[in-house]
Length: 468
Image (cartoon, rainbow, N blue to C red):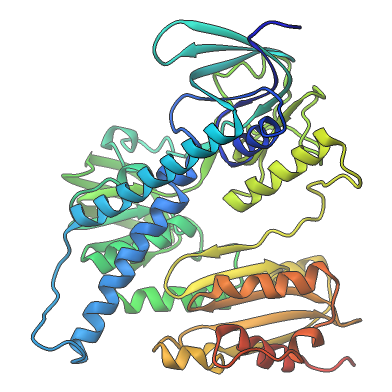
């Protein structure tokens, strides 16, 4: 087809994987277009990963300044309260810079950004209701569904009427909430709980499960909860909210049960942080014959193809682990498939590293103790307090620990977890050893600069028990 509206590749949504597939293909001379109806270049640089970490950093700096002022490091310079408008503007400035960076990439690669709402008509046709009015009908050899996900707001009576915040609204607050009630004790809930407690808010976390971070090993979740409790965060586990009244931003009351007993709490703001749902409605997927999973995610194979071979789904909407770095790997899977690079990259058995950006950070890759036990995998455990990572002693940051799982039958590394300062920076060293199938001794016998955080890996893996 020679129509000016025919493309090699179209991405419905401008998230990490979709935009990079289009940028990469357009840089080789192929015609591509990225269609976006709300957040140009995806949620990560606009309202998710980077903006939230920007705000967390502001909270950490405030916390450290207050800590050392109380210790007498800063004389006659009391630090009290926080100007949230400054926090917000610093975040906005960063978002603006990220937008400009993406605009430069778009220009350099020659890809096209189309602002509007896209509907998939069939395997090769997309109809776009343009943001500025009118419609365009586009065709493409390859179509990528990259529509992302959104915060889930349950149908609890009164909850939606209370106008609760999601992370999007919370990142735009210009004042510190008097009492922030967070529904959900998962990753984003804990990050925001600690940050806003440090800003000066009273913070209460409501979790329906028996413990916070239910997917982590119990020693991990317990240690992190203890740290946050010491900072003043209140936790209510095994708590089910059955009704909500009032309006978030003014006064709001949540009623329910805790371990079967009556429970009630009143705060000024509600943050909903209880999971996410895929954005797969109202974009023509089912009418075009795209199969969905019962969860609403697009059903894909290991190469991220849908049931229609030239239509791919990537990122959150395809049930990829909800991390930007996993979306970036989705890009590489689709890129290599379209280029028929041999051997083909796939999603099968890939590493899923992640970091929780509390202070201290929680970093993990591979098997946890709980997952290994459940799968019947025999392992040897090495575990050291974070104080054994000597750099932490120079930072007044010895809380936490690190642990490694090593195969009981050979010396390969099965999993690694660290709760400590900048723990996420420890992951690549361990990941490389794991992906290359190196024995744990490749780390325990390394010469690593003293004093660095990675030096602690020598001690940790040096503590692995011998094989029986």
